[in-house]
Image (cartoon, rainbow, N blue to C red):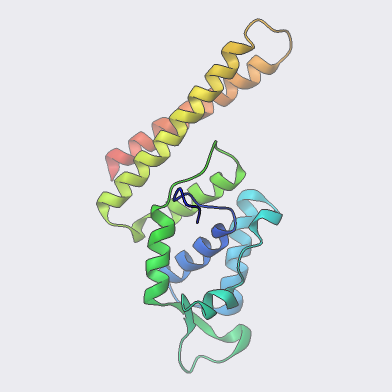
Length: 179
């Protein structure tokens, strides 16, 4: 994690693995497949997501093999107490910059594992994500104002992006109210 408490791309795999094991213990091979599938479906293949292997998470004491479950790909992995603390740190960290593909992955992971947080922390995360949408909206509206009157299709594209961002902002406000 960065000094400003924001997530960096390599932490996406870490969050995906720890969150998945927070939900339930899984065989090593199944966990690796699940993490690869989820991250790949959100952002596609990405060199930025070459994070620590599951073996590194084991060496750090964040996950461990359940006793008597076997070895290698068949071994059943479980999250440790240190892993739960790391999951909490990752879930409560902020996001960097504008809404890009990696941030989209972090938002999806936070939504997937939001119940790992206390009710107040869930509301804070909804507020954080709404604030990111507000910043994105301001950036897009500024860009649109700067290019107003220009020929071409940029303004139509920006209007579309602005509408999506407004919709996402409304969704996070509604989520906040449900939490």
